[in-house]
Structure formats: C-alpha cells, structure tokens
Image (cartoon, rainbow, N blue to C red; front, side):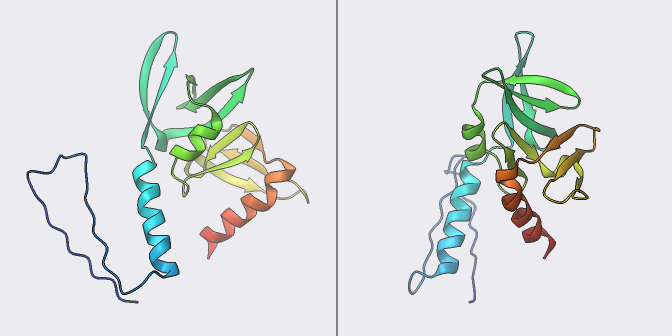
Length: 155
C-alpha cells in the first residue's frame, strides 16, 4: 500500500487544531488502524495535573515512573516525589500513550521508559525494576498482557 501525505500550513487555523482528510478507494485494515492511531494520539496527553501540599503542578508524563492507587486515591511517582492525581487509574489508562504506559496490576500503571528491567527469573512472575530503584510486581492476571507488550517491542 502506498501512502501519500500532503501537508498544508494555514494561518487561519487555530494552533491547537489539525484538520485531516483521508482519501482512499475503500476501507482496509491498515486504514482502520491508521485512523485509530491518529484518534488515540489526539486523546493522549503529554502532561498531567498533580498536587503536593495544596500546590498544583503540571508534570511531563515522560518523567513519571508510575501511577498507583492506594486508600482510594491515585498517586504518581515523579522524580522520586509522590504526587496526588485526581484522575482514577482507568481514566489515566485512556489518556496515557499506549506505547509508553501499561497497566501491570489492578493498582498500578507503569511508564516503560522509566523501567530498568523486567526480572523474569522466577517462573510465573515478573518483577519490574525501575531506574529510580523502585520495584513493582506484575499481577498474575497481567503477566500475559505484559509479555505480549514486550514481544511487540522486541520484534
């Protein structure tokens, strides 16, 4: 399949908007995936609003190590600081870039760019070791999903 991209910059269009027209002979699996990826990109965010001691911060998601829930609140670890986040984990799952973040348990979403390694020495378990020396465990229910996630990036 050949894809031609024509980009035209127009001053009258708001800087926070992009208009796209896709022209094709028919719908295909590749076209459907392309449209879904574009839609997912528009939903994803590169920043998140968080709080420490009644101070509000806008954090770059690339530097967030993990999001986790504890005692009915959601937190994130950012540069070795713990921030409170208003969004629930399921809401964050929808917002965060799927290529960088994966849910490893009912209570934790990790940023794979902050992972030092996935320790798979013990059969049937995966230990996530982060660059900041934190450790998380992949739940039994999420092991196959995490392995699939890793294999997609390996190939």
